[in-house]
Length: 217
Image 1 (cartoon, rainbow, N blue to C red):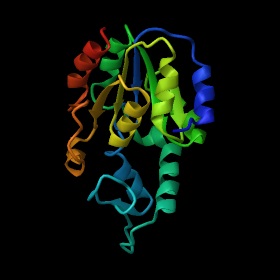
Image 2: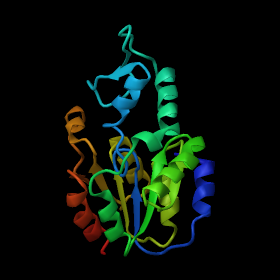
Image 3: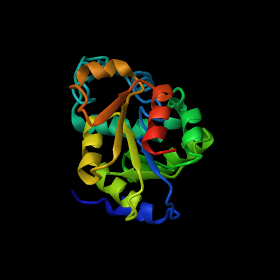
């Protein structure tokens, strides 16, 4: 699994930290995504029907009913991320949980999005008071988490809503504590059961003490 060189460059800019490491996905973990995205699509003349856990195949042009293909989905996502400050709010309980966990852990936000959106997301997170370091990656998350951890073997926890990202973390950091958190739990119905080595949490209220315990805080 290869590294994203731009992500590696961003990691090198971080101050050295040997506290336990908490890595967080952003969309549907720290910021709402699934709830505001349909409202954004409506303003562009599209509708979202969630009949599976993916966007391609679930977005239709309202006027014609035509399901749009992957390139159009990618373009709409780009528009959404450019205007995310208008749409994305903090997921319930996240701010308090991170304040508590941040007293003893290094918190880093790791988002899978084109690097060009990093500046907009950074400004939006700052405006919301979430001034934790932000990394963007266009490749698998696992190698980035391994690089973030460094060589000292400090405890690592990783929270994501996408099972594939949690699997990537497991492949790169065998002893990572993995948590599956979804801002909209109704989407769990589309996913296979969570593997035994991943802890499913309903919300931040449930997640915070479990993460703290995993990291020895």
